[in-house]
Every structure is written in structure tokens, then in C-alpha cells.
Amino acid sequence: MAYDKFTVLTSSAVPMPIENVDTDQIIPARFLKATERKGFGDNLFRDWRYNADNTPKNDFILNNPIYSGKILVAGKNFGSGSSREHAAWAIYDYGFRCVVSSFFADIFKNNSLNIGILPVQVSPEFLDKIFSAIEADPETQLEINLPQQTIVILATGEKESFEINDYKKDNMMNGYDDIDYLQAMKSDIQSFASQRLY
Image (tube, rainbow, N blue to C red):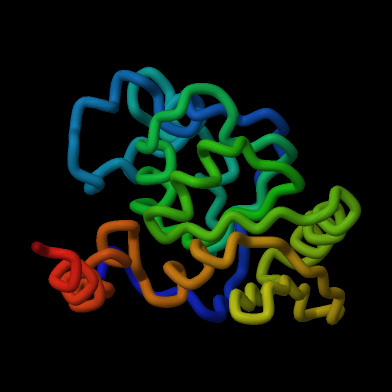
């Protein structure tokens, strides 16, 4: 299995209401040397999280201990810029399993789905409600229900549906990447091929 199965996630969230966050801000280019997915979380938002002397910047949201959880709530147009899949790796390695925004760059969205991060796109109005709920109570819980394709602010019961490709949804619920999906069909593929050998 490529990653943990995703069905229903209930968690507090980290709010980052910054628009147009690109992949170089998510994981700077100088950290792209590794080819495995491990260790990238240490450098997630590196230049925003740390000073030049490697001390944490107190005013950056990930360094604020009152916010935690497996959900990152981001501003509009998250994941724009270059297509580096390392950006998704860094978010996953840090511990996030879901990113909520009112718009995602397509390549970042697909890279996330391939490794087990669920990108939940909501309306700008619902995103504002989430930010307001977290501002009022940093421990506010969100429920992300993948089978039903809904996101709920549990404190208020406010809910919105989100879209996801059926193939990607099935893979997320099984913890499959594209290779795992093919491996799960191995016997069917072999049977199909054997009937066509001459």
C-alpha cells in the first residue's frame, strides 16, 4: 500500500490564509536533491518558517503552538508554479493529510492525490467560514468525509460538498497509487493477456 487509506478524517486545522502560494514557497528548490519521499517535511515552507540562522520565525503559523492538526486550510490558488511533486511530499511528510482551499493548481492537485493527500476545493464563502471558525476557536474540528464527499465544520454543522475524480477517490479510499491500482488488477490483466496470446 502506498499510503494510509483515507475515508473520514476528523481533525483540527492549521489556517494559512495566504493566496497564490507556489511550490517554491512550499519546498524551496535547494531541497529537491533527494529522490525518496522522506525528510521533506522538515523543510516545508522553509524560508517562511526559519530565519537564516535556522531559528524559527515566531510569526509564522506553523511555529504557533496553538494550531495543530492533519488539515491545512490555505488561501486561493494553492500549489501554483512549477510541477515539482516534492511539494506534495513535503506536506505529507510534515503530517498533513488534507489541504482545503478555494482553488488548486491542477498539477499540485494531481500530485497530492497520487501520494495520499486529499485536496478539498470549497467555495470562497465556505473557506471564509472555516477561517472564521478557527479564528474563534483554534481547536475547531473539521470532518472530511471522502465517501460522501463532504466537509463539515463540526461546531456549527455547516457543510459543503466537494468534487473528486472517481478513479482518484477509489485509490484514496484503498491507499493506492497508480502502481498499486495496477497491481490490484494483476490477475485480471494476466487473464486478459493469456486469452490473446497466439
